[in-house]
Length: 113
Image 1 (spheres, helix red, strand yellow):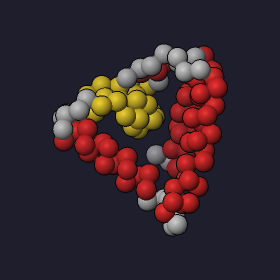
Image 2 (image 1 turned 90 degrees about the vertical axis):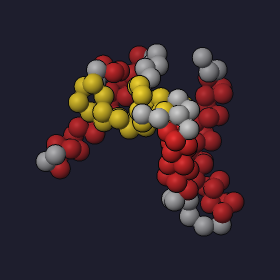
Image 3 (image 1 turned 45 degrees about the horizontal axis):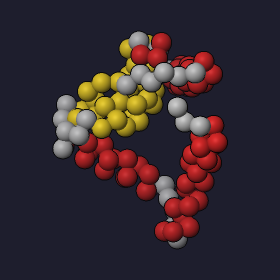
Image 4 (image 1 turned 30 degrees about the horizontal axis):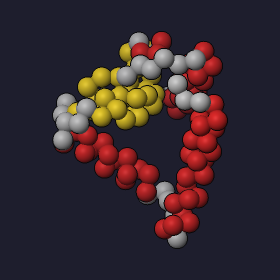
């Protein structure tokens, strides 16, 4: 369990991350995060690291959701997504995840997908 103070620090650093990258690179940061994530994912697959990384995957019952793509922790190895990791979430965290999935479903509905 992460202490509430530490979690607040992590959340704030995440919010400020783009600005921090721009400060060091002196250019935009839109390319950095996707390329870093792709490199990490590729490394986990090529070297069969079984690394737990957040990825968007199709949920089929995990976290109480079915038929929706959502960003959740997965184990990546030589076979790609080897398993979806279901962490124990608080009631509010689970509600937020379901709210996010509902928003994704609504956007898809509006788009006719």
